[in-house]
Amino acid sequence: MASRSVLFAEPGLALQPEQPVEGQERGVGNHGSAGLLASSAGRGWSGLAAELRSHSGVIAWRNPRPDTEICVDVHGGASVVTRQRDGITDRTVSERGTIWLSPAGGPDGVIEMSDPLPAILHMYLPPSQFSPMSLGEGSDPSAVASLRFESSFQDPLVAEMAYAITSELQRETSVGSMLIETLASSLAARLVQNHVGTLARDVSARATQAGLDRRRLTRVLDYIGANLEGDLTLARLASIACLSRFHFSRAFKAAVGRSPHNYVGAKRLELARQLLGKGDQPLAHIALTLKFSCQANFTRAFREATGQTPAQYRRSVGMIAA
Image 1 (cartoon, rainbow, N blue to C red):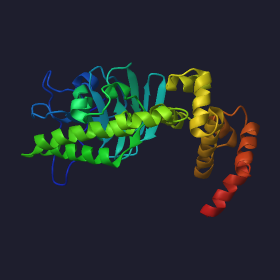
Image 2 (image 1 turned 90 degrees about the vertical axis):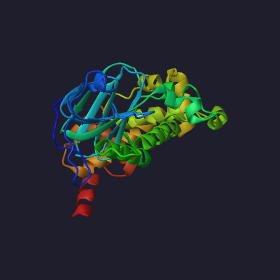
Image 3 (image 1 turned 30 degrees about the horizontal axis):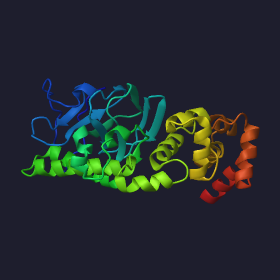
Image 4 (image 1 turned 135 degrees about the horizontal axis):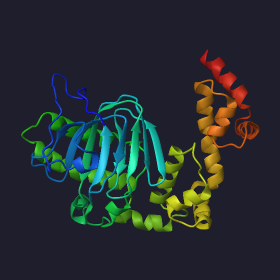
């Protein structure tokens, strides 16, 4: 991982890579010292630690600490970022505001970038931020344990918090410590709200809801969306939901209204329409990419869903674009 001198900064503010001090940077154990642009070490921040880093190439991905790590692209650059961990592959085109969540612990993984990322903000939330004392009475003490590795996502509120923290890293202010303490609590609450859903007021609703609970369903749907070109077997999806294949299949259909097989097929056909409209990839290549056994089966499924063959659809899209 190479360090870069090009970084995101406020207009007129030059920021040079910091020289790490042994044992002071919270994230050095995760990513090493290369590419470190700025750090909260020594600033007296409470409730959250942060680093601004540049990344490129292929790097090891690990989070051995008890902290939850949230990474936000605060610069942008259209790099294709591929993360592989715990049998899950997440691939996305990074842009300003793209967010990745990495829970504490878990197996090591690999991150690959097609192009350098000039400025990624790494934020580290300790387990205490997810306690009932921090989140308020009625919150679930096991909230932090329920956070899971998921595909990249967008959340304007989390992104704005990241931009504010980046600004404080770049130019320290007299009220910075107070701001960071407030943002740390807000960030933890937002993650719980969107990615755990374990507040007490939701428990009774989930208990009576037919099908998968919100957390399991979100995890499965995000996994499907990130792996449409992979092998989305019933056994794999059931393992993501931590259920047997039989119970998962019934619960998924009750929650979504269609079987896992039909849902995956529909999502793959949506992707097929995008691929057909974007370029001139051979139909056989698209069929194999989306795990159809042959081009004929792909054509049959596409025609049943849209009323057109893939070739007819591509021509119609081309005529509209012209």
